Image 1 (spheres, helix red, strand yellow):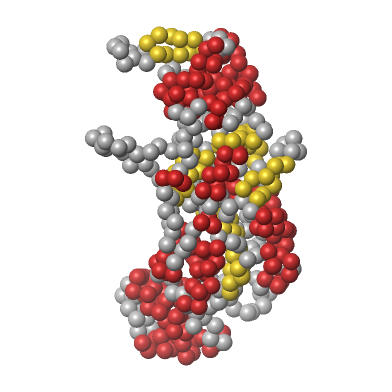
Image 2 (cartoon, rainbow, N blue to C red):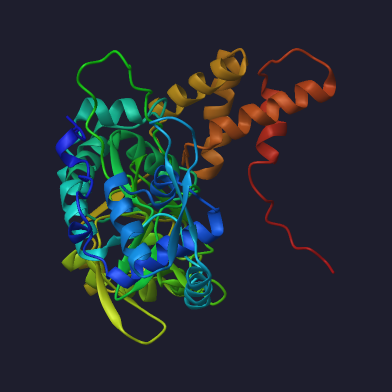
Length: 435
């Protein structure tokens, strides 16, 4: 079964400035920039913007006050519970503007890379164990032979690289999505990480699906343990790329205006799945893409570079799934294939499974089955293509017949004549076009 993301997998909140393990000047400047940009006035509001505990935010504010960068404006609310207000001094405003000129980043305090590495180990994709029942359920309505699940199950549980190959239209993309569903649990994604004084944003709402916290019961005696708010609790991420993937997309993305970095796709997918679909359709040759992954796949670490040319290591904890319609021997050399841990052929269905898929699709779409029409399809049409079945064909043929019925104004039905008309659109005719 899946290993649950128990409370001890959650990143603990820092308890002091010393535990932050960030340069003091960097933390002070992010504090000043955040107050300047967000116009926060209280410790509580500033702590929320910085995603830090109140006591640490208070320490930072006291530090800035001692340096005459912040000043007290007095209690904002009457009564003993009124919070003290703070604002930037003229010197503080000048320092905030100077810091913004160096980096526009403000808001959530970044997590040091070395601290994030420990969190990656706690929630590693390789700690996941998927059972046959979980994988079968995650595949939903996909009709798959048990022999395929025999190969997929160990591959997913190992958290190692997978190459799925075979003819087009047999569900490689759907199987990849099913694998994602089988993982099922959650991880903690940092909003940003820090290396060598540089901020790299990681959390991406397009890639990461946040799990919203349930409101606490105020009458509950025992409060839930809070995790480090610099992280976002998310489902295990899935990054899907296709023919648009290029080598540059695997490098840090530098924003020259904000002077900050954005994590590359594989870093955003840490703890989850990176799917490279349609391998062989990219501008770069597949061999070049695999060469880029050699170190990450073998050593569980990636090497990234800053604008200065400095190289550094980041954790590589991702289940990489390559999917291609080409035979692996056509696009890879033996050394590259050796580095891909699991190689799984996704072939077309048997005639029996094809009929199961056909019946399932027909039922879902409200198309009544006709035995004589099906016999006609199997005996007259498929021999024309050497009885080669594909998983996409039932959906295609039934959708074609539905479109014809709607155009002709007749009830949904399956006849040899409609099958002939649908079949004509399944393939392109081998005829010479005279120009």
